[in-house]
Image 1 (cartoon, rainbow, N blue to C red):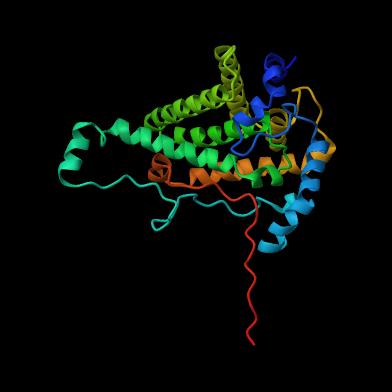
Image 2: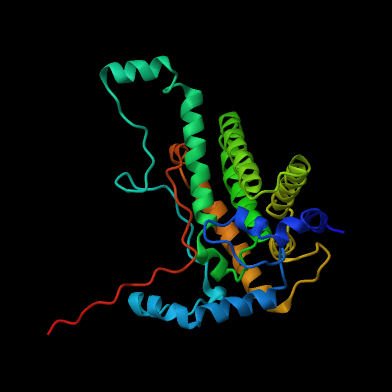
Length: 299
């Protein structure tokens, strides 16, 4: 029995009462669903949703959405993910003067540790806001469940921690602040969902999954690894119900797209400067291609 299966069996009661899906969802509580289901059903559900009548008013308002061709995604040249200086998305420390700055200095607000904690919170917010976007599930044809959201969260945590290692001891230390923020967030989400029984044991299992996935991603991205190794690991970590489950032929284009996205984001993060990484002033690449806004013809 895989580790995910063991965890799921321990918490089946929580899943049946809507608790686990709610822990990683900002929207209303979804209908009862298993931790994951096979790719074909998830893809069919996504297609049905995109063609549902309830989606028609939205589509009419923003215009038709282009068909997503996963085989052509994430082939562009990597670039820095740092936000420009005039971006409204930038996270900036407040600039106080006079007595207020003096008091905050006494309270260590401007200390290196305090700045690192604020930076770690900003970085983790970049990760969760990206993982929570519906687009990422649509493009990679994933059903949004506890397992898929947690798996994507771990994948993006690994991308950031991998980049921070390039900064030596400072990067590793800063990465520890991000991990502590992540760990607290996961525990809080699961606890708020009502899973208090065996919470410590549940968190230990999630920790094992986290570190296990990190090692596998590192191995799959090593110089000795082949191109297919990352595809295989992403299938097992994100899509498959069981580690031994063979890859679904219908899932291959989506899994390969996620592997290409992962490789490209890893390179993009390497091109992102240290200041952006330590302050959270970067933004992951959009998974959907930019659609040019319609232009009105002049008469």
